Image (cartoon, rainbow, N blue to C red; front, side, top):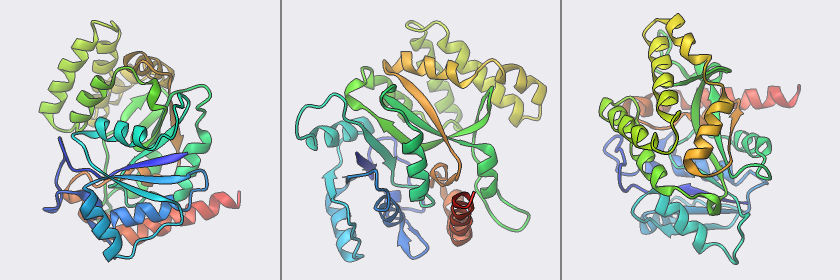
Length: 307
């Protein structure tokens, strides 16, 4: 299996710390891109690392910093948007037509990603029954990264399913040839920062258009937003009223219809895959506590290995 690493900085990209590409931000003594590549190089299920972004800058960075991987590492020039980047790399690296070929897709702004979490995600996925697996992380796992009285931290926005509270993490296992509605993915990606009200309103308009195809879509979307509002505003009874109506299986079924694929969600336990450099404050918190958080995750891996 190949892994596509998205290191582009095109449409709908958010700059952090005056850097127009978060892959090159330093965390500790290395760039985020280097941290990610070194972890992916340790994942035996992966064959090649396919990196797409500003090709010349990436190649200069790899050479200047002496970044090398044991796995084949191919670099491609970025295109106009996320979907075009994925499809370009997928088609360019396909030796022959294979409708069942699957790829792991990751961004390049998750410095706390560990090889063990990637392996957990891959091993829990079943691509014989699905075309797309999206990663989730529990709130319980992400509490480890919260601010304390004396230290900064990262606090996320969650989705409240009947099974519990989850954050969508950054791991995606995909069979690209199965996707029929890439236009919806483009629009959704452009509105992914749901803390911003104008993006929420744009997403609402998108959902209303979707209602023409799937009548239950708007209710699910607005119901989950109201559930989240209840919990985040201190009205847990109001939040639970909506939360219990949306088991994961219902959401998986809706997403499958919207995208025209068989979709299932996979829960991983370490948490680093969900901690991305979303804004300046998160970046500063990650830099300040990187060593502590990295060791914490490595200790968790050791504990799980002995259980």
